[in-house]
Length: 552
Image (cartoon, rainbow, N blue to C red; front, side, top):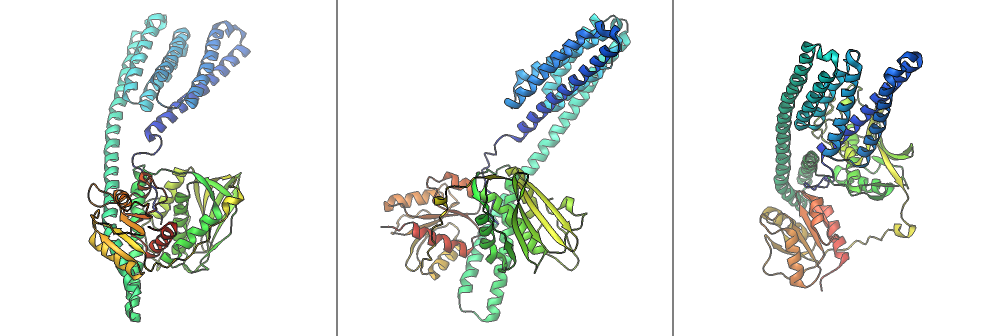
């Protein structure tokens, strides 16, 4: 599974700011709706009882002005999102001003407006926090003071007035205590979630190193002359290591998504080749047969993040093949309401309707009697989270005994590039005999395993555990990014290029943040690949970098 891209310091807008902007926008909508219904009721009163015209027409004009102001506020919030304290305070004075006027002019008839005044007071605190709650409470008490001072009925009812004042103090005070406790609980939950994410990231990173080394040693064994029973044992080890590798990648993806560290890179992508690559690149690792997945070619282009979309498709495909073993899986595209949907169909046993609402939950697995599958139930959870990041939707339909279809929906269809840009470059299979490689990795087991594997392919390897003091001429540099010191793989590559006075092709290997490391590179032609490393992937990249240029 391709790891999602990381950038812990960036995730677009702050989620809390987004929520508060939505709250301000929804408040503006509520204000428009209430003002509209007030206008309707006033119109009805004036139409059916002309005697009431003189008593309500001033209030009618006031509500008309409030409606216009409410529409203006909504437009301002929509056009200029974000926190503007002056705008919020101005809107609070608008609300309390209208309510104060209504309570004064309406007398005992409009006493129910007090419920709206209390609602507005508590609502400001719930939307924007305790400071706004305190400010709203103070303004509400001033409003009540004006109403009591200018309304004969309220002045003649001191117990009623005292009750309203006491209620205006007690209810927000109780809301304040609840908000304080809620904030503390939310901060504790956020801290626990952050600690969990850090643990998952650190554990998956640290455990990747030995798994990476074991995988390379296993591949060296597979190249050695073995008896059939020995080869079968080594292949079983290799399959188990692949399962563990996928598990670590899932854990790292979840911790990344929880930390809000996914950065999208939107580009124009042709879906057909992307889906074909997902199927082909993972067929060896998962032992899919040639007929296991059938693809209906799609010539359309969409605007999306190719890497994240590929991860989504791969997770759904893997899930389909695990739960529908031996059955064909169909991957295709369908237009829906001007958008495109990727659909993955299988002919498995299907999913019980009771399971459907929870299949995108973390660690939720459907256990069938006599049928157990690998995994811990994170694949579909990652799919749903990535869909939210990309602004897409994921749906599932299933019939027991007939199969299941997952759909990735709402992909934006765009025009493709010019035909001249679509011509694929021919891929030439390069032998690696005699290729000189500078290999840098502070983990000695991983260093030895990688060096042994490269030498079996015919390469000449200079293996170093840190930045080398002496650098022999080389054709390719392969460096681990995390070298356990202030020096990184990027620094080692730059140093080697300066010493050799040549831009040597390079490959960076990492157990963590693939995209953040790629962002640090000045040379974006240098690939960054994730541990545990598949030998076939390494060989392909080495061959591609060899074709890119050789040392003088």
